[in-house]
Length: 282
Image 1 (cartoon, one colour):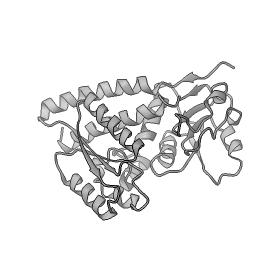
Image 2 (image 1 turned 120 degrees about the vertical axis):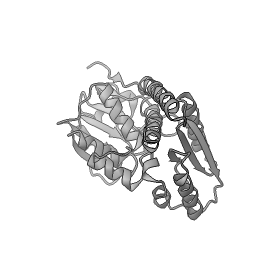
Image 3 (image 1 turned 180 degrees about the vertical axis):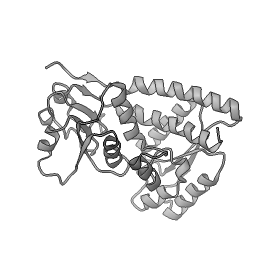
Image 4 (image 1 turned 90 degrees about the horizontal axis):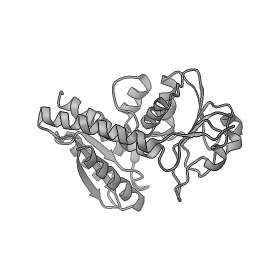
């Protein structure tokens, strides 16, 4: 069998950002208001600081204004909730991104729920998960949304396929499964307590690895010709899939980096402009 074809998230994300920049320019010209994304960071975790800076740079590329709120590492849940509610009430802010992780002392769910659903462009609130699950207007979680765009771009129709999602986080694994289910895939969730993970993965036509364990999924675990989406990112630019062995068995596979990551940011920017348009009635 020939090697898998790479699903180039960098190239697709570039096109989405270019289209988003055109939408931003049009919206700004029609309304006199530039879409604005507020980013909130608690503490100075180096990886998080890098991610936020990257998102701010992409905002500039798309013509989106960005406002950054940096909070000290010892910020309380109450103070963080207050900051997010203030941003939610600010008409000059159209989208809000709360960078995570944010410290074990923070009630992460309480913080997410302080974001107004109409500004939840990262798709992290209960409201966003509900609208996503029921196929109603709202915002999808950015990484799962980016994954679906990648599948579409490479002609992968989930309908009738067996999809295995390895991971069950509230903003990645669970919503990825719901989006696949909405597209008529038969979805199985696997996680740290799954007995014989390899056997479950071997049945999958589509594998989404999103568990945060380096090289957990190996080539021999895959069904020949499977589509493999590696949404993991671990130290040393390593995904949750053992790329070297998986590329020999899959038909399509995302690289790490350059696969899912760029699509996450592109989806965030796209949803920020959509949020601005809705709030401005344009």
